[in-house]
Length: 96
Ligand SMILES: CC(C)(COP(=O)(O)OP(=O)(O)OC[C@H]1O[C@@H](n2cnc3c(N)ncnc32)[C@H](O)[C@@H]1OP(=O)(O)O)[C@@H](O)C(=O)NCCC(=O)NCCS
Image 1 (cartoon, rainbow, N blue to C red):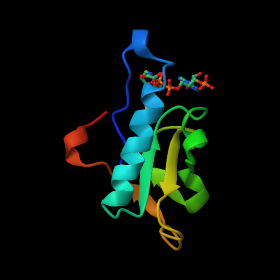
Image 2 (image 1 turned 30 degrees about the horizontal axis):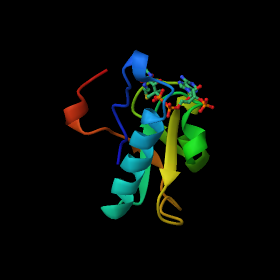
Image 3 (image 1 turned 60 degrees about the vertical axis):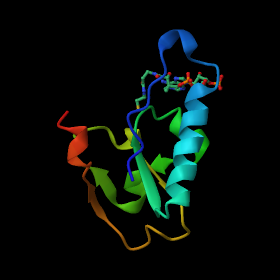
């Protein structure tokens, strides 16, 4: 699953809204039985929720972005074991 898009209106940032959205999104993915979730975003923000650079698993983004901004979180133990390749976002995200 891809966690996106993530945005909080500037005058409401730093009040915990982003964290709540991320935790809620992760929980929803767990509830729906997904094994892992990816995110494309700030490398200093998402690790606090457990995300690690996807290259750790041999997984890369379809987009030409630095390795440390495409991250993944395993939701089930070993869900990514033995899995490698390129993550492609649903067509609903369009092209960037
Ligand atoms: C990233 C974003 C969603 C965070 O939302 P938020 O409601 O401000 O987040 P929270 O209040 O839950 O968390 C704030 C914390 O995140 C940190 N933070 C915010 N933006 C950050 C960034 N770009 N890099 C690193 N840390 C960041 C703040 O310093 C703060 O840290 P603290 O808890 O240690 O004080 C919001 O800043 C945003 O909409 N940014 C513009 C759009 C964007 O860049 N989206 C991400 C694309 S993936």
